[in-house]
Amino acid sequence: MEKSLINNRKKNLIRKLRKMQRRVREFMDGKTKMPAMHVSYKQKVIIPSIQLALSRIADGSYGRCLGCGSDMNNLRLLIRPEATHCGACSTIRSRLD
Ligand SMILES: [Zn+2]
Image 1 (cartoon, helix red, strand yellow):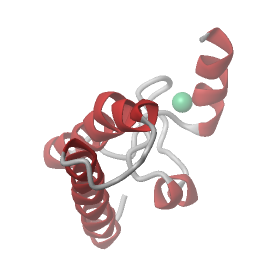
Image 2 (spheres, rainbow, N blue to C red):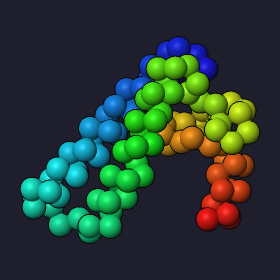
Image 3 (cartoon, protein in one colour):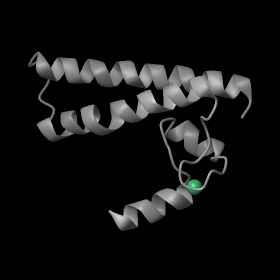
Image 4 (spheres, protein in one colour):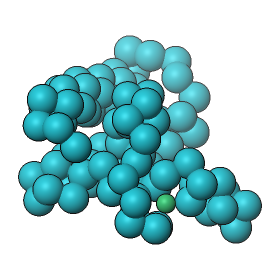
């Protein structure tokens, strides 16, 4: 993946991470009426996956599918920069769940 593209994804990820953390904090402070289920999903799934994506950017493996090892579609990463699996692998995974 091109360096400029990676920097762009990194910015998106950091922005998203901050937004998620802010939402969780607002919930803790009683400033929002978001359902507790949504907050726990953010804390347990989304935030860790963003942190994983950022660490993969740091080690140079970002953009590679954790399932099949192929390069992920740029459009997919644009929509979900924290994605760890390509479209095909996540379809298989969601069927297994
Ligand atoms: Zn894959």
